[in-house]
Length: 177
Image (tube, rainbow, N blue to C red; front, side, top):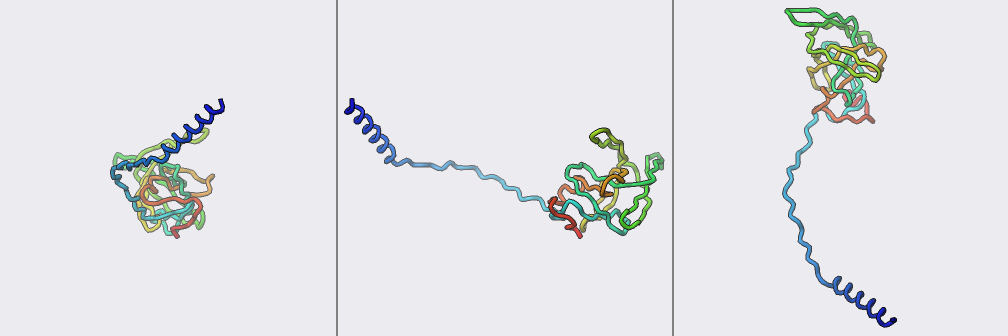
């Protein structure tokens, strides 16, 4: 039995050695070319979680919370009054910069009404087009009119302004000063 066992082990060892000694030619697989798209240019570059924004024609900036989770932007307003002008729905409202007291009265055509979903309830808001200066860009964008007195920031900048214009790094702040 010992002889057969030794013979078997030696045979296995020889087969293994022979198979390792044979040259195996590896033929690389041809991979088709892939079009690489360069990242889109972001004119505002990398911005932080809080940035200054000017609500035009106001002269002083507001501290704005940058929120990539918000589809649209929002602004804190007071004295909201809806009315009709030339058969269209309009709204008048006051914007007051709480940091320095600057006040401006606006009259804007209502673009639409939207429903903002909250954890415990939904809220209907009027949406208007506002001109803002964000970094070196003048942007005309939708803003929902809200009572943001319970929030730390009077302006929330959402994806409707950010997309294609900026990359957000929440470890930064005030990069647009």
